[in-house]
Each structure stands twice: as structure tokens, then as C-alpha cells.
Length: 214
Image (tube, rainbow, N blue to C red; front, side, top):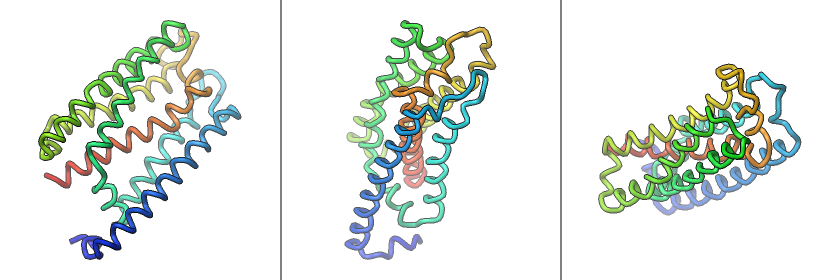
């Protein structure tokens, strides 16, 4: 039995409140850190280079999340008690991926990145309200195969976009406008360095809750 379950409910509630405040502070610090780095051109690299700074900005918060989830019972229980309807509903913002298609039409993003990333995000964003409605009607639907597949596809969409963005210059050498160069500039740089990790962490939280519920 988890140690956290032996903690007084009032103490646990206070601990969760402190964690929420800490998480909010970390998000704010994280946002302004990548914003400042983006304004200084820290994510820009010579043409043909792998976008290592952007990949690190994605990998570091996800890695820290896994470490905290692994070593801290309190953090783990806080993650597993998150409002699943809320963290699922937040994914609806990804319908804004249509902006990638607009930028493609303006010749500001290459098609090899804009189409899969844009359509993938739009698909997840458009279906998020239906997933929330299903959770409201039947909380037990968290254990359904459909909920698992939806979250896995949401992560796969983001991983695919990052992969195409990073490897595009090597896979499509004839393309003059690369996703890596465009996504390394503000304000677009905030998408891979801030929003992509958040969306991945929300999907992971949903999947962790599903595994506990099975």
C-alpha cells in the first residue's frame, strides 16, 4: 500500500495545495525561461543542424516529471488525483493547429511539417470535447480502449511533428523553408519548447490514471 494513503486527508489536501502552487510557479518560470531564450535566439542553429536546444527544452521537463513520479509518493498521488476531465479538455486548444496550415499557405512553413502537424493537432483538439463528455457521462470510460488509443495518438502526433521538424532538412533537402528554422523563432518557438511538453505531460497523466484504474 502506498505510504501516502496513510497520511491524514487534511494533511494530504494541504500537501496537494502546496504542490499546485509549486507546479504553477514552475510553469511560470519555465515559460519565461524559454521566452527569454527565444528572444535571444538561443534556439536558432545553422542550417542543416539538429535542433538540439529545442529537443532539450522538450526532453528536460518530461524527464523531470518521470523522475518526480518515480521517487515521490506525494507527487505521484497528486498526479493520479488530477481532474481527468480538465486535463483532457485542455487538449481542445490543439485545434489551433490550423495555424500551421495558414503559415504553410503563406509559405512560412513547409508542407512536410505543416500538414501532418496541423491536421494531427486539429484531430486531437476536435475530439477532446467528446472525450470529456464521455468521462462526464461515465467516469469508468477512463479504462476504455478508446481513451487509451486517443491519448497514445495525441502523443504520437506531437512526437511525429517534432521528428519531422528536426529531421526535415535531412529528409527533404530540396526544401528552402525548413520547420526547424521557423519553429526556433518567437513566437513559434514557444510551441515546441513550452506547449508540446505540457500536452505530452497531460496525455501521460491521463494514461497513468487509466493504468491505475484498470
